[in-house]
Length: 485
Image (cartoon, rainbow, N blue to C red; front, side, top):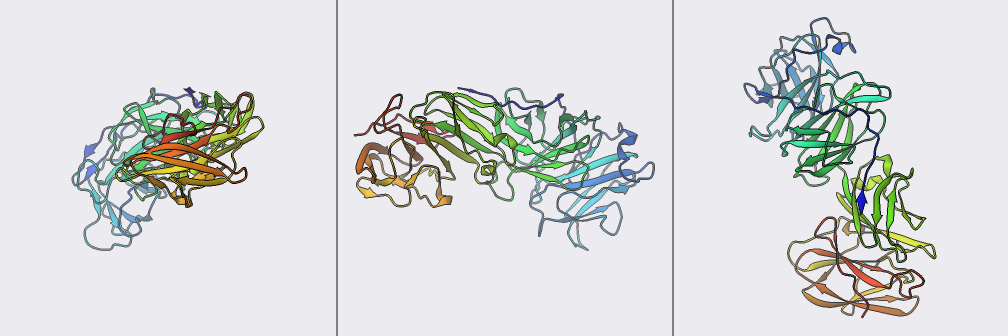
């Protein structure tokens, strides 16, 4: 099997990291602001010699609603109020050395955080990122201010300039695979926590989804779809949250795209998808996009390939399996990425006659102790709806067939298998035929049993088998197909 993801990204350049210094109270990331382009602050009417600055808040645990007020220097009133994401630009004097953060509406007492030792240069435009963990006192991840001068290079025709900021609080250095097509050769390497890539940015096609993989130790640990890249503009893509946070929790990792507009575009963390087929009369198949670009090539029967599924990613509209010159639609709805961090999609049935179906497995329970959980799906050719039994007892709530979604979120409870052998039988009620298989239980973990092949093989069809997929690993490990008793 060969996996390839090909996307059009122009003019990629290497990226460097920035250094930070320690402020008087909390860690303050300060760039060298003395080499800025005087024309950087031309978008708003700012007097000569002043600084144009906006604030981006990516802290997840500020108290109350999470909104804050920003006080600049000795000003008695907040300059920026109710900041939750991105503020408008404000003009400040470069002599300002202190910025304070207060909970929204807080009028007295100590601020939540105060940053001192700030150094700004006149005639610059700055995006200041507020990052870290509000509840932390550790120098590794406590709240800090990261001011970045906007020094983007001129974007090419049809392009935007993109600069990356790493603000994931529990990840040290990361690399960034721009295009999500080669984790072994990421375009950005050694990006430190609370650092940014090169000030000039790198070119990416404006108005299109930019696929991004975050890489650690040569392996992509999460992926994002960055949207909202504005034509001809410089854009920050800020990664924030915590790698250790639970999926769909407040602290989950996200990307925030901030260009010249004040409306950020939030990118959800991608889902890892294992795709395979058990089509009874197909061997190697290719998974392709609607315009024919390969996603996974030479996918053999019972083999799983993996890819990242990203929300609002147009590359997964109209995906098909090409098997022996025949096209089989595969449901890779990009909204799946919002439902669960891991999915498994299997196509089954038969090419001839043209009867294919598929199932999607998601959000299943994989216990580490106790009895093994078991799921079942019928993707065979010539076997209809029926009744599933384990050791002679009907299984309720787990008879899922055809184009189905499997998992607790959809009411499909797992059966349990104790250690030792068990008889799993399936009665096709339409044909009054029962098939039985000997399966093995165990301690902990979960197995998906897939009924596949053909009960009465015709032509190139494979004979009926029950194939186990061990869900304890990802992609799931394929076990030895089990013949009927």
